[in-house]
Image (cartoon, rainbow over all chains, first blue to last red):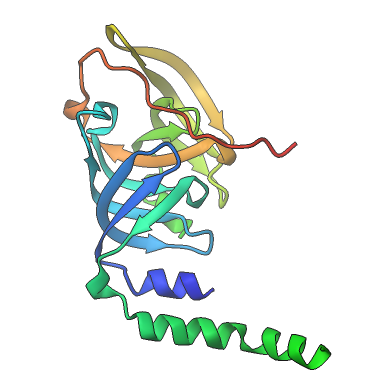
Length: 101
Length: 95
């Protein structure tokens, strides 16, 4: 859930999505769901000389299962906040395992 | 969201499948796992060394697993150059 919330904070920002077939798309993040399917508006292909087959695409829904990386501009990420949230999300489980020892 | 496909209902879309094929058609149905029904589907076949061809497929159902991207497109922006097909997505079979 933490990553879904995180990606939701990036809606409207320009991101790059690398697929498992090495194609990289950039576009404005329109929406993201629980499977991390993403929808990008005004998609541009990185390296259009190599992938001219995809130049006609405009707005694009990308299935989460084919995504390898999502690159995000660092200025839009609060790493402190993200780390805090990750710690909180994992806190109950780690407390339980330490009490079991 | 799953709703993000809904706006393409009854519109012409381009589906890129995980084996690298490009299928165009009118989206007449879909569900939450991206199973798709395309009416009047055509495949845009890219072959190295010869110009892209359109192959008529008719009514097509694509299982969600095989879907890579769904997009709307600019009809006039397709390349007419002889380019190789898209690379497939490497995936292990879960049988």
